[in-house]
Length: 337
Image (cartoon, rainbow, N blue to C red; front, side, top):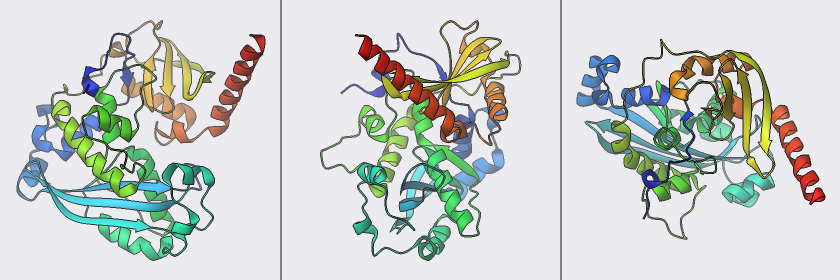
């Protein structure tokens, strides 16, 4: 079986998804941190007491601002000297305050009938809050989404969800993989490429199944992640200046959407679905010559966002307009031929 690391990289586009995930990895496993990121106090705690990791996966009514959680699975582990010790599990189904949207139901196979006799969010929230209360780290596959959904639940119930470390297993894969734009980053695809056996009975988009797979993927990726060089010193690199931008959708494939920035160094793309930045082939500089951390911060301020990843979920009107333009272009081309 070909693994994810055997994929051809000849035509690869190098991407930048931030060094934050790699820095957070050193907070999960402080004994692995290079000297510039080493925290002796945290390292001693991890060695003696251990750190509590909370793995989570959610299924929801959608991805918009009004979406709510209808299924949540969690596994809490004590990690000491690199050993994962399972402490507790949680699995809850939650009845939403409105009917389950058809699109969401098609994806996660959760129906109104399944939720009819389930507790409400207010009823189940104390159990969820108690489960995550002592978690040092919050870990998921596509963490920004699960964290956003859980944080919104906490806010609706008059509480705050503030784990010390948030870590994304999907970004582990992105940091390790450099392949063409058509490569899928969903959990099922990544699990296959890291060699996790799959069968027709596997229930992806079942919260408990997904969380178990996420842990397996993380464990499979860790040996490769350990070999990555530490984040570079970016102080001497060039910071591109943003001149203007536009939104673009591929006419042949609507899941390819970019926000393209015209900068002093050439075109730089933000990929809506990868949530990563890449430099155009015709740009004046290679991505390794640019201070992409500071550029990502400029993009965030440029759009008035709290995080760069919010560009994926916000500005939906602009994304929809670019999709409409792509559709019209495709129809025009098909009519011509």
